[in-house]
Image (cartoon, rainbow, N blue to C red; front, side):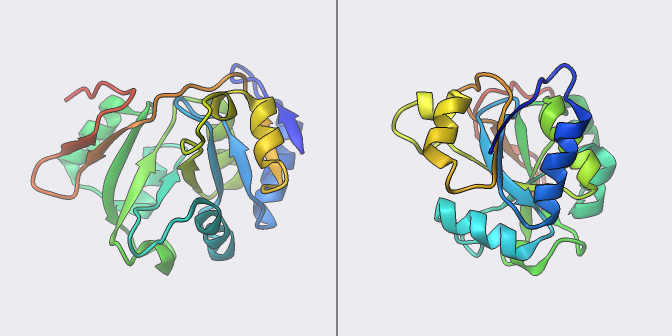
Length: 201
């Protein structure tokens, strides 16, 4: 299924459809403020396992990431002190993935690594979906295709992945640059991958 949504004013009925699919353990492809991504309800372990299989991720070796609606959502699923909270507040919503220590509210599949990537993209479509779902979304980018059009053009993404997922959301052309990854699990935050985001300290 291919659904068109607009970042400026996402249609509530269409958002409800997406949420219904996620509640049933379905997988979706959606726009962010960087590249298009694939994901599911982050608390549905079977769905998370499906996404990991599709992307060839091993939760024991690869860091998993989730999209939260806001910082109060982040504090529910990850641990952070005051200085990290302030750093996130300055930079989110935005094109960043912050690696934090997991909180006990996340399922065991996230806990092998003891860390989780946190995203709050500057994109109303995916944030509205997370807000309506009431759970974070487990997220991983589509960045491993050889041809960039299959990462940025929603119709080509649907052509390529439509049989793999339950819904592709057309939110307009995506970008090719990934998020900036910041590891906040040590004494000082460290940029481990420079992407689209210029971090404000």
